[in-house]
Amino acid sequence: MKTKFITLLCTLTTALAVQCAFAEKADRDKPMNVEADSLKHDDQQQLTTFTGKVLMTKGTLVLKSARMEVKQDKQGNQIARLWADPGERIFFRQKREGLDEYTEGEAETAIYNSQADTLTLTHRAELRLLRGALVADRIQGQEILVNNNTEVFTVDGKPNGGGSTGNQRVKATITPRPQKNEASPPPSGPVLKSSPRIGSDKP
Image (cartoon, rainbow, N blue to C red; front, side, top):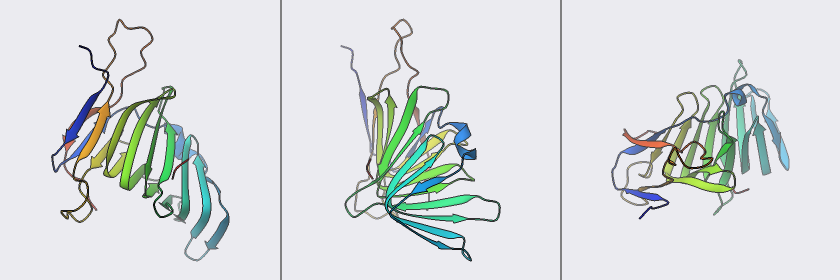
């Protein structure tokens, strides 16, 4: 009997690394555009704080949150820290390079680093691969690090600090690779492999 989905419940203390063709490479060179209810800028610190229904776009990258702080260095590199309202989650969405597919996700907090081209989702983090309107793959964990330079994302199921409370399992639902003789199959989703643990809202 042919199953449509493979569900992996990983009890390992190690994280999962996923290799795939990831975000649009051109996004890193696009300007950052932000909308919000209010803005406060500290020129000396080069720190800008946006609050209230924050919407950030950078090429195909979209980030939505309740609050965002953006710090910029002398070279123009930006680090954005995002927070959701209590009980809610921030939301992100980005087109995949060379494919008619999107990656989207949610978490309570997030950090976007424009120079490293990374996005870190923490606390109730979730990552989804969409083919059209369908969710093909879904990854859940305490922290998800998306690295667009290396085209790898890493998922950690253990809470920060290594305590015994909280979810200690990474959960993944992966759509099987379509057979070559099947009609119009889009490219398959990520392939999972073990990796060392990484350190340290809605639309």
